[in-house]
Image (spheres, rainbow, N blue to C red):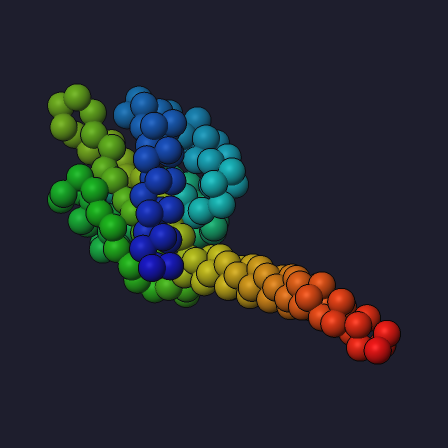
Length: 170
């Protein structure tokens, strides 16, 4: 369930970033696309990678793209180029973390690939969110238990008080 949530988060981030940087990639405006993608990565809290059709990394919000190897053979990139879009879970070659990736090819009106946009959500983020949810659920459960015990005590006290008063009076 948490993994499915992370996949949905990667898909939603990809759709958002595509809407913003797609036209820039098609027009060859890499600097504008890079700036927008980096801003979206910070806003959405996901890793965003822009990849040229050659596999050259244009931008990566989690690493220095200049030092990165070609992404042409990354499974999600190969699948996105072949199928238009892909969703893959694997260990990131860059970060070493299990990551949920969604990738999409950006094509011009002639169907020519102009780039690939990839969104990645590390499993650690999904598991951290789950841990927060579990802690919150436990806290809520504890509060409900304490309030239940308090109301039970007050309710029982309301019934036994008259009996206690009668016993003292006798």
